[in-house]
Length: 135
Image (cartoon, rainbow, N blue to C red; front, side, top):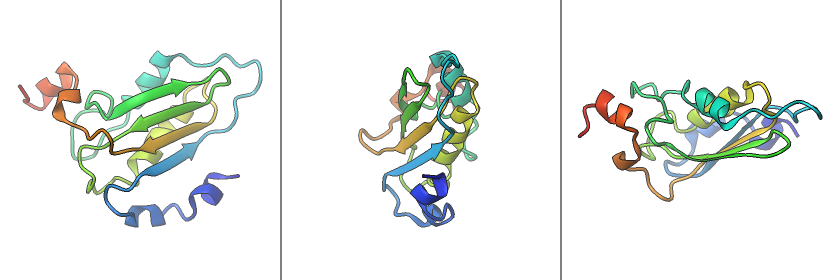
């Protein structure tokens, strides 16, 4: 089943209710025998994704709750956003899925946007707190 078949019209997801869970998928099964990427490589890809309104990547913001890399190269990411009404809530999981799927040694990617537990600034890295003037 393709991304479009699973998710429907990708542009409809932007009209979702704030706070609703969203799942984005990208990638294809990893061919047998291809070495699976490391967690560090996946984290590096996650650090390339930014909320356009915040000058810190989503990983350092603490928006990534879990990264699970399976032995066949598939990846599941659970993430949140700083606020359910984020204007790009429907887009960011797609950006994350595409960034992770582009990593060599990664196959299918599933990104789940979740709201429990709610995000708080305590989840930010020290670098993010410094960049955003949080103490």
